[in-house]
Structures are given as structure tokens and as C-alpha cells.
View 1 (cartoon, rainbow, N blue to C red):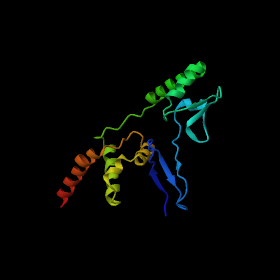
View 2: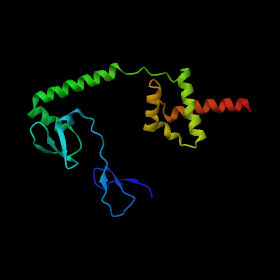
View 3: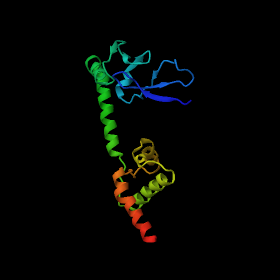
View 4: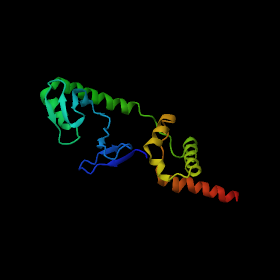
Length: 173
């Protein structure tokens, strides 16, 4: 029996996981990593994402959703100096992203065509669906290995790479 990931019947549609050892196990939520800078100032209470405690003033805040805007509003209204720190950090973070962005390889470049053909070979020889090109895991691999290469959409593979391969194979037959 393997672990399964299901969607919760609740209105939040949050993923839950169940243990393979017992069917009576209570489902538990898989928490997403907290990426917002506002989380520096809050701790979750009893692993519940909707009940948080402000680290600065120890007040408990009950969130109605998983959005962090009300947490940011609390920091802004109650702790203005911390709010200014968050604002500065957010601005510098977005500036770093734009200045450090890697120039992209054009789809027509020799390197880009070569990498696209490698992906097609991988798909064909492993009997994988073409939708794998939109997999975040495959994109992460290529982002690490070749940051300037952006994996094209499925349409590009169908209309360009597969067509080119078809013409080449037909010519050789």
C-alpha cells in the first residue's frame, strides 16, 4: 500500500495525506512553506495556519483565509517600524529578481533546439506524456542545469520539434 494524497472535502481544498498503516488515521494537512516576509513576525498556534500569534505584541490573530494581507495590516497598524522593514525588504527582493534575471535563450538558437530535442527523446524513449514539459519538477531541473533555457509549451513541441523530426525521418526513409 502506498501513501496517497487526497483533496480535503472542506471548502479550502487543502491537500491531506493519509497513512498506509491504518485506515482510521486522522488526515493531517500538508502545510505549504511560508514565503511571505510577514511570517518573520508571526508564529502559528498548534500548527493551525488560521490562528497565529504576533511575535512583537503576543496578540492572537484569527485569519479567515490563508492570505497574509491581514497579518501585514496588523504589522502596519500596530508596529509601524517593523512594517517599514518589511516594505524595504520586499522592495529590495523584487529589485534583486529583476537585476539578476538570466537572459533567455531564443527558441531558434542552436542550444535551445538541442535541449528541446533532448526533451523529446526523453519523452519518446520513456513513453511519457507530452504534458511532462509543463511539470514543475522538469522545469526546476532545467532551471538548475541551464538557467537561460526556458522549456517551451506543448504546442511548440507538437508544431515545431515533432514536425522537424517527422520531416527528417521521412527524408531518411
